[in-house]
Length: 552
Image 1 (tube, helix red, strand yellow):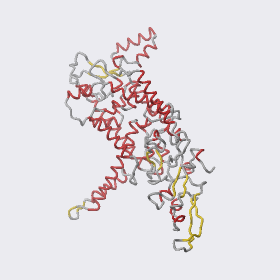
Image 2 (spheres, rainbow, N blue to C red):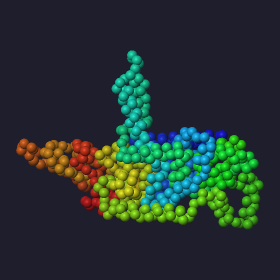
Image 3 (cartoon, rainbow, N blue to C red):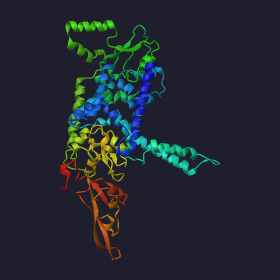
Image 4 (tube, rainbow, N blue to C red):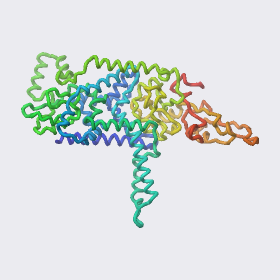
């Protein structure tokens, strides 16, 4: 069926677009990203809604998602079947299951458990109302970006490099014909177009990869399990498109009630009965293509010119504006999914209560500032940052030095997977502002390079019990050499000390100039101690918190 082939082509296109935008974040020509890498978050209505409810400024790019909202009012949850990359990947893994048609019909029928995603949606929105924006834990684009960008992509990169290094080392071949004649040009191409400049490593990548794998394996239990039961974006689109203009039409005379349409339906939308559920339909046309009698199609609600004309005359004659509008946005009772108002209200209250409980965390309430909680340059104050950040992982993936990692509990439980800098793995590149360019919600404000270079994200401090010139009478100037500032933030004072033999030694003992240090972490990352550096950057002095500044 041509519509199915068109839908499959659309799915392939958007999956490839997602991976392309992910891969181009591995290249950093003249401090610019390789394209609109945040495109999928900008067309996500859930990101727009949660950002608005959280009370933070909405970036103009997010209003692009209103196009998706408008199309959903017409075509229902078409986005899930035609655009969503995670949905397309779930669809592919669902197709790998081999079940008898009878079993597929039983598993494909509508179930009240499909309401779970709606309760999750209202709980998340309830939390967003008081600034606890946890949408990124469940948003499909955030999950796919973190799972692929921070777990799968680094693993593939490591595997490819190790494989080509192994081929180069053993140099297999026959006589003068060596395998490296082929592998080396291929490796060069991958280095130029696919592999990162340096192998990335991320704390938490195992957990993020496990979450993604679990979502894919759940398709073996039910077709598109995530989309059916959990996805809050799908739930939001289901609410918006619960009474679409384009609807499923079943020919009662032709239909033999064979149930094949149910077996083919990935959303359990009941296409075989009068109780078709538009909120669960992905408009994939699988039911129509799977119907051997060709008794199912999709048509505009006014299915004939005569019916359309009758409605127009009725509207002009009686002017029942409110009734017609209500009919468009209120589906027939048999097509509803049957959510109870008390359950919806309860889900929202759970989100509100959870947010209130989380907001009394000392770090969130700014009663204490964690020394390890160093946010990327341009980050908002912590309460605003947690309200705006959707844990998408874009800033982590784009960081050229691999310094930005997903947080654990440095910012309390609601700060899980938000970005922070880990200077034992990388450092904040002085001539880079990429992380400020890719944030879809402006939790990290866009900074031009001169402004970024003057933004303090922390301050370096020496541990004199470990520093070689201070503790062991040994000369070392590594930290000062790696300080990227034109006027070094690390300076020396010459001092005469005695070594272990009692002999006088003149050493340069390093100190930090707090007026110059911006907390980039280059000194900590370069320290000769690889276990626990003798100079460490702490959050004190950060520009985003006035109360956490020592030297004013």
